[in-house]
Length: 251
Image 1 (spheres, rainbow, N blue to C red):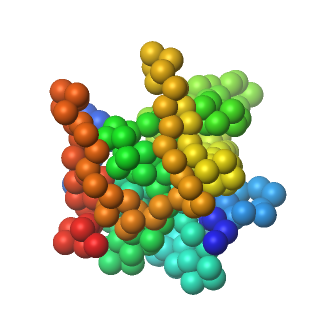
Image 2 (image 1 turned 90 degrees about the vertical axis):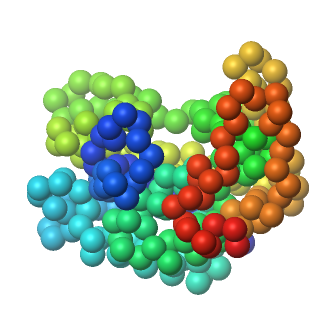
């Protein structure tokens, strides 16, 4: 089944690196999708060209705008595409569920999606950064710098994007989001082509997981046996990524 990658950026910095999306409500600045076969990612929505889709007070997408994103992803799934993300289960989908008000639909989208980082976590017991995966697969790295409106070049990461967004650097953040969708899609396709995902640890140790003929969906990952984490001081539980789903998390 062909992929459609999905990524979003939040509109407000999270205090103390909090993970409670319901309580913090950071809002969605923009979101990007890219289908296999697309020349460029589609980034939604440009505040300057989308009146009514942004809240001037919060600088975030409105409820109807977030609702339209859920509808778009659902339509892609109905059309036979598989949503692919990097940590979408623990970040993108819970935020979208809160902001759209369509929690049940977002749970189903998440369970049926491929979250490559979550598959690594379920098989290895620890998360992995997208940069490390791209480097291990010898694919182009994520964008880490963007051009601002005044011509200056600034560094950017997921943590820095909200500040730039609220400073009015919408084009820069949208470009960053679109590039993440592009890199995520490229990694998903290459992982299936090779049948594995390879990377190096910080100490330079080679690592990999077998992908086989295809990536596993989140629902399938949740059926995998727990990996051996006895060597870890404070291993993360799966609930760290699935807790927002509620009772459906074990499906």
